[in-house]
Amino acid sequence: MPVAHIHFMYDLVKGDLQEAKRKLADEVADSIARNVVHHHQGSPKDLVTVVFHDIGADDWAAGGTLFSDRDP
Image (tube, rainbow, N blue to C red; front, side, top):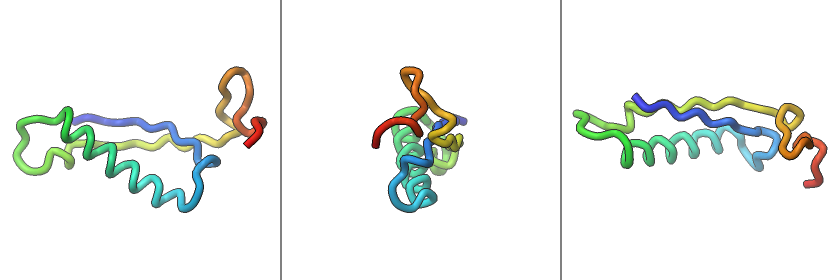
C-alpha cells in the first residue's frame, strides 16, 4: 500500500484548510493509483494513504530564515 506524506505549511493556505487538504488528498491518491498501483481487484485508489504533517510558518525555515519572518 503506497503512503504519501505531505508536509503542509498551513499558515500559507488561502481559504478553507480542510477543503484544500481534501482536494489535495484526492488528487494525490488519484495520481498514485494511476501511476503506481497495478493489478488490484476493486479500486486501486483505496490502497493509497495520504498523511498530512501540519507545520506552522514558525516551525519551517529555508535559507536560514523562518517563513514567518519572510515578506509576503
